[in-house]
Length: 160
Image (cartoon, rainbow, N blue to C red; front, side, top):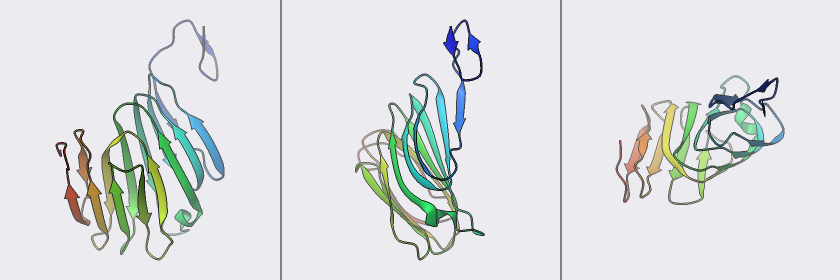
């Protein structure tokens, strides 16, 4: 029997799991054999995923939720992705997949540190006046800055 939160099953099944922890300080551990999706709006987060993890960070124009995002620590095994959506104009995103820490600066907010482990894919969705610097690692990377002004370098790996 496997406890999956709301009932028991005779056999554990592979499932996709979506986490939306809201505000506050959270420690979330996803299932090892599932695709774990973390939707982050505010707070301090320590996220541990399984073999495939996707982190989505949202920035809302109306209430400036990103002011409330204080810290991310992302740890996982396997091939993982980070998606930053709704990036406003004149923002600056620097992500170096070779380093354990990357920087995200939205408009005039202070720089946010994002601690990343085992992330190979980055997708940025934002305004065309924002800038990004995406540096890959020795793995195969998907580095997508969308309409933003970007410097993208694959380093030792391949860029998709």
